[in-house]
Image 1: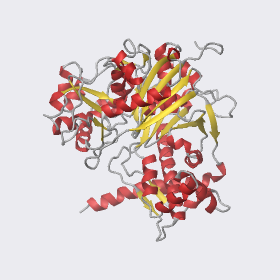
Image 2: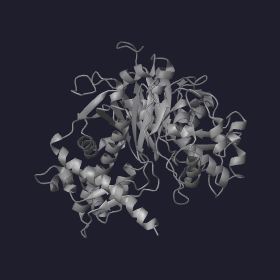
Image 3: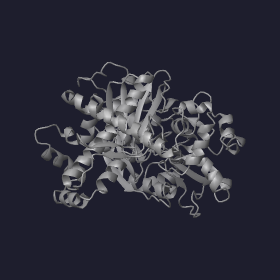
Image 4: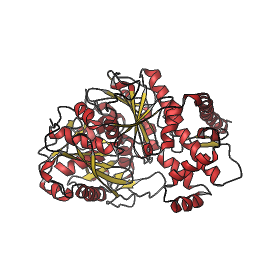
Length: 550
């Protein structure tokens, strides 16, 4: 076990997000010593079809990995961990890319996590009411892999489905590329593919879904060797992958995690002593990790399985070994804030002013809100402006793909003040969505006292404060803002054998940075806004019923 006087051990974490690949060099105490990122391509050949390239992503992994280990003694690098979005990678029997599109472009061989092409397929899968669906909140999401596989079978039979040899979740593709081992991570298969940690695959589900061909070869195409996250794969890094990544051959490579789960791993185990938090001395099950970037995921763990309607899981050992995971989520959060701000008439003015001050547009908006709030708390500026945030459907807890976004309280003026208040109301709407998810989890049996935030949006102080005020719970931020990368590095540390367990690595490598407490004096205002928030969706459903009526 690495101690104070021993030489430093390093681990490399690689995180493949929606728009970029990021890597970090992390030591055994969880300190991030080097960071690099590289953008990756996305294609949207038609609405709701989102595609990427596995070759493009691997090339980006190689660029960032080489950057973070520059000037480092390679003998001190002990392990490598990957996390990635839960996108679907399709390869033929020789591991070459296959097209997931009508154009026949095999370079684009990934259906991205946020792709919503398989709406009719997921609807039919949900109509089966199969028992595996109770582990995804009762209703499967269009973002999971079974509906996407069915779409490929029904739409690209000759060019893709019949030629396919391997369907990988992106995190598993990366660990295969690094080691040549096709074993899958329990995390991906349990969370996105209906695998059960206790019972394995359920033949009857795949047959009922119209995907019986996957059963015939003992699930060879989707994985029949499954390992817990952090387990060491094969003989470690292959010489070829080592050359690509600029790392020593043979170092330990871990079974991977989905990106949000790596974020959860990177924050949820931190030692909170001395911060005056309710969760101090309480079990880790009183903590909710919220990983907020393009979308947001809400990770709560429990000792026994808890079934939460509209919330994914319970998944056994999918994030923290030995614990059941429930995963709530919002399909668009960072992406929604960008959409609202960039689509506003005052955006060019905002951009110019932020650039002149050498600030991000969001830092500028936050200071502009402080300027216009006068004597009142900043959150009160949205008293007449209310947003329902489901511009890409509702993932949790309503699990309703048909829901749309709503804004009420618009005026004719479109100046910078209006843009700032619309931005504020959107951030608040996302926080109200988190509150709705927490209420669903608590009414099913979870007991949550503290939020642990990470991901890009956790760097925005307004986003963090609104989550504290609106949920009434303190928010813990990590010392290392790149918690997802720390989570990936924790996997590499576990695979190396330097830590006895994932839990031990979590406790040693994740640290509390800042705690943001709720302003309880504003509670009454947010309770009222929350009532309006719930009315919005109620009204939306009423409008839909009127329009469908005779």
